[in-house]
Length: 166
Image 1: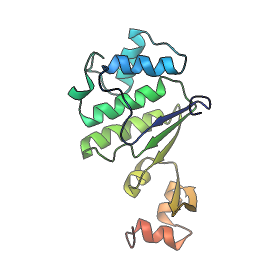
Image 2 (image 1 turned 45 degrees about the horizontal axis):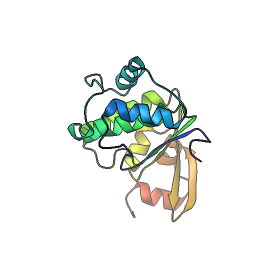
Image 3 (image 1 turned 90 degrees about the vertical axis):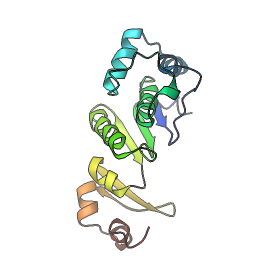
């Protein structure tokens, strides 16, 4: 169903195939969406994902967590989705890798609609244009990010943002 609706999805624990190298993972992802990639396009994707130093021949176990996550994002994007969903894209990353992924998301949101699922309110405040706060499966509040963080309409949102609970 995800392919049918042109949605790219990057799981919290990326879904790359460990025994394939970077290029092979990207080629496979494209093929699953009835697309094809040239070696030049692979290089362009690696550059766009801020992975300029990679050739594409690297095995996944030689990459850092941040590099692996950026390869997973590229694998979702080579399918040419309309919507990109990122589930906790930086939850297992150090602050430097997190910063690189956030910079990448800022760049990507110029070309894609991106939905980010995160428990990090700080991250949401840094990179989101609009934010929805959910509590126990209910949308408590949805607004422009600056409004939601500076003047929330719902006390539960304010309590969560200020650390009174959660």
